[in-house]
Length: 301
Image 1 (cartoon, rainbow, N blue to C red):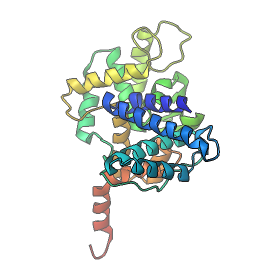
Image 2 (image 1 turned 90 degrees about the horizontal axis):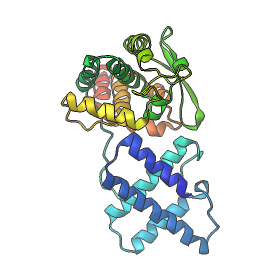
Image 3 (image 1 turned 135 degrees about the horizontal axis):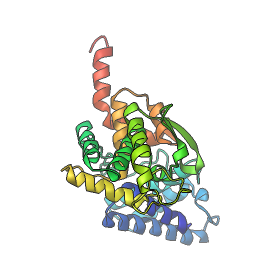
């Protein structure tokens, strides 16, 4: 069961860009929950895998924390860590349902996903486009593609050349659980990729058998960490104050799509969310669009 926690923490590091202190808290909270599960075996059925953890087990854990006089804010944080962990297992396909669904916890306030504004995103893309080739064309293509599709950074760097169809404006990717998605891309993203393939990738390529779409300076497949460093460099050069990680670009895509009027189900499919409840968090960020549409549609508004 410990490897699943390690995979989740790696996800938080690479995809979410969480601070070392936050990761330390997640690690402690989840390891403490795992110890409870192991100690709890004396009085209940043995638990040998995460699919066996029920809502009742988590409720017992919350009561145990309360009995040990933990503050509500601390209990809420620990329960939130467990919820995030099970949401991750659900997205990975390890679980078919989450025992934490609709589970309440002490209210301590919820931080909504951060997203760049459309103006900030435009500045970031322009900054990448201003750098000289071959890196500039590659970087512009990557940023245009991730903003056009909402790809996870792992999905982005896993793409092969044959996954891109610029003629039909689409990209094929394998998401969590090896689920394939065919995603549309807009004309600007297709043009940026086409320029990269024609004028930049051949100059970086070292091994003609390399199938990776995006390459580093050595001609090898670009890594998640490599993309993150590139992204942070452009954010710094563009003087964007909003903290930027690869996951922020994914948040920005979803938020801007919903504000533009895209149906929640369509955004869910593009993001590759197994459960629409994962996508619904973005509806809070698009509330101004909902208000505007309400004022236009309701006869009494």
